[in-house]
Each structure stands twice: as structure tokens, then as C-alpha cells.
Length: 374
Image (tube, rainbow, N blue to C red; front, side):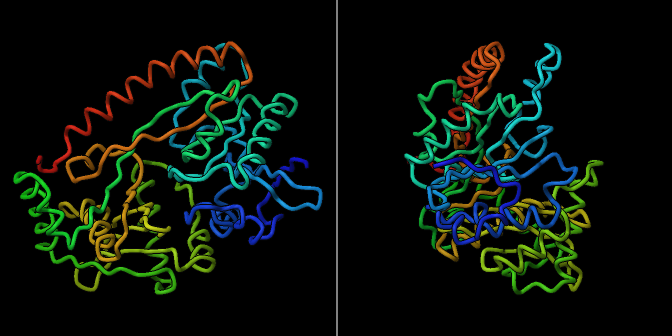
């Protein structure tokens, strides 16, 4: 058995990669990851260079894998280690390049160590031994699932980091009103009023699967997506070509809700389906309307999840405003292997303090949920 680094996922047949997946999560599929590469969203001068790590058997068949990238910065990761990089710079330590096991621009918990657990453990050990030889400062694995956590926990040198997101759970609601009835009176009135405000502005919504959107509508989707970055003076992470490739390669997983005022499209939210979950990813608008963001990004997704019998709606990272709308705090995990012993010790101290803060915050956040007691 030997470890190979793939500079492109296209070096491995889609069926071979997808056979390693044990969860129906769209972000890990060959179609999604290769679309990032083929569209130029990663690679080139993006600071994300594909370096997928694969353990092959004697016949060249993959036994385990880690979707991974060589990083020359820390943007687009949603696990923030800029402070660690700054400390290294001040100490004369090279923090970049680093190796990152993650899905680019997608803070979604899921399978990271793919394939047989024993083989995945061997892959991990091989990678940590070879980091310094490759001129890498560290290996980071973000938004891990329980299987990866079990492999990483207790392994020498690995540091666990906690984070917090907000997910909505469908408790068998018959419809949106049934969900509202589970809330306190004050919050129920607030959410109902917000939906009425959007409807009162003459805005309607239309859900589409990937194959149901025209190129003109995809242009609109991308314009909205890019606008969320440009209003902050930033360049969008994803290219227009990425959306076309995704629509071509995995249209059944795509869900887009279009918001229109009359015949004029004004906003959109882009989501992916996987198993019993809906993953809200990107949103944007070309005109400002009261409460449109909440309706497009939250309430429409809840409605859709209820109608389709989905169990979970992950509407994206961050956003404490999700709490009062029924999104519950969920602990996320990432793991970090730092070669420099002084850096490792300093980060370990920091993470121990941060852990208590994250756990305390999640507990406090749960007390702010709008659900009726009893």
C-alpha cells in the first residue's frame, strides 16, 4: 500500500472516488469537487491547489482518501487560524504552505476520511510523518464527522477545535404553521409578521431543480451570488463556470429558489440536497426588500424541508439571528496537526481556553431558542 497525492481529482475515476463515500452528502462527490477544479474556482492563483491524498492497494485501487488542498492563505475555510499564522510570522516560522483536508468554501460537517477506517488511519499516520519532508507546516481537517473524530481523537499530536453553527430540525411538522405553533407566542407573531411583510411587497417564490433552470436564469443566480461579495468589495470565490458544470454533473442535487416581484427576478437562494438534509449555500439579491433575506434563506428552506419530509436544514455558517428563528446550536469539530513543537504547545493552550468558551456559548444559545416550554 502507498499514499499518492492527486493534483486533480480527474486523475481518479468518479466511480472509484464515490465508492469510498458512506454518506449521501453532495459536497464530497467527484462531480462537486471536480467542478471546483475544472471551473477554475480552485487552482491557479486561488491559493487552493488540489492535493488529494489517496491510499492505494497493490493493484492501484483506492482504500482510503482525504480531499485535500495545499493552501497559501486561510481564506474560504470558515475555521479561522489567521491568528496562528500571524504568530508564526512574528516568530519567524513559515505557516504556509499548509495542507488542508476540507471542502473548499463549504463549512459543512461530513465525511472527511473516506474509505475503510483502518486504511484511513494508516493514511493519517503516513501523512503526519511526511509533512516536514514535504515542506509543510501542518495538516488541518475541518468539519469532521463522528467517524473521523473517532480516528483522530487520541492520536499523537492532533489538536481538537470546537466551533458552533445553527441547524434547523424538522420535528415531523405537518406544515409551516405547525412549526409556528411550536414557538412562543411572541416569536410566532414575529415570524408570521416577517413572512407577511415579504408577501405584502408582491414577492413570489419558485423552486427549481438544477435541470429546470435556463442559462439566462443561471446567469441571474450567479449575478446574485457574486453581488453578495462585491457589495463588500470582495471577489467571489466561485466562477460562473462552476454553476454550469454542477448543473451538468449533478442537477438532481441542486435546488434553487427564485424570488420575483411580478415578472422581475430580484433574489435567489442556492441549496444542495443530500440524504435527509437540505444545505443552503449561496444567496443574493439585486434589490433591497424588507425581510427578504430571512424569507429567501430561512423560511423558504423550512417550508421545502417540511413539504419534502427532510429532517435537517443547514442554512450556512454563522448568524446568531438564526437562533430566534428556530435554528439550534450545533457543535462542529476540526483537527490540527502542527509540526513545530512550540507552535503546537501554544495552540493547544489557546484551544483549551477556546473550548470552554464555545461550549458555554452553545449552552447559552440553546436557552435563547424560541420554542415553547413543556
